[in-house]
Amino acid sequence: MENLQSLPSLAAHLGLDLVAVSVLTFGVFYPRHRRRELVPAYLALNVALFAVVAALARGGTGGGLALGFGLFGVLSIIRLRSDTVQHQEVAYYFTTLVLGLLCGLPGLGLGTAAALAGVLLAVVYAADHPRLYRRDRRAVVTLDVVHREPAALRADLAERLGEPLGWTVREVDYVRDLMVVEVRFRQPEDGERSSDATRPSRTAVSATRSDRSRTIAPRPPHKETV
Picture 1 (cartoon, rainbow, N blue to C red):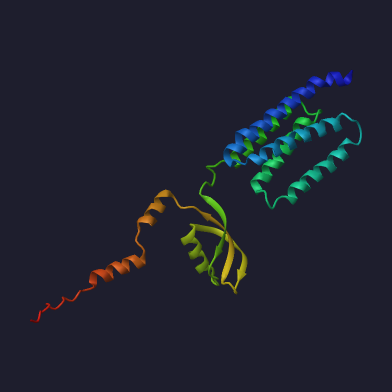
Picture 2 (cartoon, helix red, strand yellow):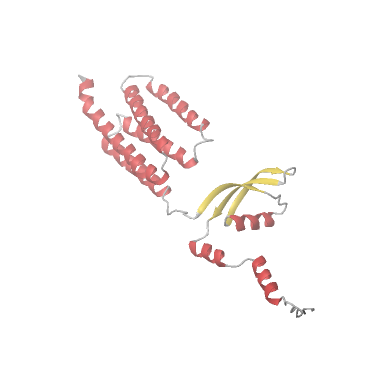
């Protein structure tokens, strides 16, 4: 009889969880990152965690310990795969976990769970907004030269990418004369790109000047002999 009375509450919490994870996945994540392969992962992880939390919470004693071990295992799997998943995608993973936890706990009221889920969605929406640091980029660059001075490396990166905000040298190969650098840079504006594109290079300017200053000696008249 008690289980029958808890079914409407369970259905309401499940509906809240589905709405929250759908807004996170289809309203925030996919329009910004276009990673279709991560959409079922987020949805399945969220719903599975909701089911586990709801079942353990209604199963009696020992549920908290089992839930703790389960969360530890899930987070360990995500951490092991962090070499192929970006940090912002790990943040979405963690958000789906927390949403499943909030909505799956029966002792938490529906209004409280909805308010906490709304705050979490708002934070993720603002923290990953495209207009926030929209010019900042990150790239791994392989240079065909080894710079020994930081000033020379900064100038080279600025010429290739844009104003560097910081970098980390991953590899230096003196045999092949190259270095691998992970650089965080600020992408130039469109006006700066157009001015750089229309600005003649030093080589072109010197070549033009030399062409202008070059004098061509007149040819002597050709005499025909009879």
